[in-house]
Amino acid sequence: MSEEKSLNFLEEIVEEDLKNGKYKSIHTRFPPEPNGYLHIGHAKSICLNFGLAKTYGGKTNLRFDDTNPVTEDTEYVDSIQEDVKWLGFEWNNVFYASDYFDQLYAFAVELIKKGLAYVDDSSAEEIAACKGTPTEPGKPTIYRDRSVDENLQLFEDMKVGKYKDGEKILRAKVDLASPNMHMRDPIMYRIKHAHHHRTGDAWCIYPMYDFAHGQSDSIEGITHSICTLEFEVHRPLYEWYIEQLNIFPSHQYEFARLNLNYTVMSKRKLLRLVNEGFVDGWDDPRMPTISALRRRGYTPASVRNFCDRIGVQRRENVIEFGLLEFCIREDLNKSAIRRMAVLDPIKLVITNYPEGQTEEMESENNPEAENGGGIRKIPFTKELWIEKEDFMELPAKKWFRLAPGATVRLKSAYIVKCESFDKDADGNVTTVYCTYIPESRSGSDTSGINVKGTIHWVSAPHAIQAEVRLYDRLFSHENPGAEDNFTELINPNSLQVIPGAYLEPALNDANPDERYQFIRKGYFCLDNKLSTPVKPIFNRTVTLKDSWK
Image (cartoon, rainbow, N blue to C red; front, side, top):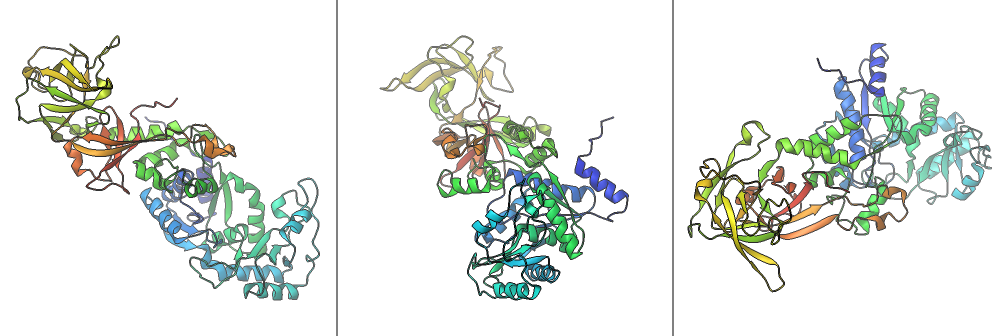
């Protein structure tokens, strides 16, 4: 009997809440700000929020936290929706914080009427000077004791655009002596004369995250508002707003965010990589964004499996990038179609093979799949392409590939013996000449000859030419995000472009949604952005084995 998987702490909380009748069903939400593309860290949050609701028969909203018009764009909204769907999840509703601007404004007015909010004319520098330190209480500004009527009028004037950006703010009147700095009269609204991607120019005041978030949760009836650990210090303020407004008591829970070595997760740093041209856009296959992983050939199942394996913790830790690579290898080993591709070609000529003859060899599409995933036919001719690394003029000890006088098996074809070779003026081997043993054909070998080495090949007359891109980790430093000079830590070998690879003709029908194992070379996919029928481009998803040093 298999051992049951233990519950994580959030599952324990949900089960207890349902058991004691606190909620009839749970309602979660995934609330990204549409100011960039989602990354692998967001994938963990997506899997957690949608996964909890699915496990316990609840619902999940997709809500865009669009309270900062300066940084937000519909491009990001569209990409976020695509990423969530690609991961295999469906939301019950799509909402925007901007849907609640009228309601949030009314909540702010209610707090002003209760004497719990005031308009402050202080500059950012003056407010910071009065904020105090973690060990010293803050001091009130001269505007803290404005009357309710004056605050109501000033807030209305802010709303209708009488003031410039930064001229006034609305602050909550909480506790200037609180040891939690977030409780020292936090800002609720600021003035921003900026065009909003949904509300246009209807508003020039926008709520801060701490004021919009909890109230949006409450409006939607969110039972379990799940955030990352950095928001733990924000929870008292989250609860304070809900308590003072006497609205649906959504509750916030925190878990450790995903930290992955050899990458950066900060949207600000990712945006810098994009804007300064270190990468080719948000979906550059070296980026940690979900769209980049998709373009590189990662599968939704591998990403979900990765998020499941790392689990849900309360403490911060760093996950090995190798685990993400392990998850995609595990998935693709079972599902990827096998094909032959020669990335660094030299010619192999079989001198005793009939001129003009073409045979069809047979090979399994995936020996790891049930029934081998079917059989494909591969054309075999007198002239082939093989990898340069499969021939050695002066073979090393225990060399089992081609060398003068050595024999190897051509995969799914014949045994050949190297007789001679040609070099160019620079001393590079260009052509290897072999003889073949007609009785050694794979599947019907009667030659009685055993060879230790097998190499792959592509028929020269039938080969299709393609560009192949070998991607590796973007950074050579284990923790680049901790360094100010993180752009100087980019791995110079993170992308190698091979313009003239030769592929077996079956790849003429390659599908961007399909994954391929180039035999002995790694897992690849057709680039879903740049590839064309005239110029196919294949991206390496991951090597066959972990070769990172």
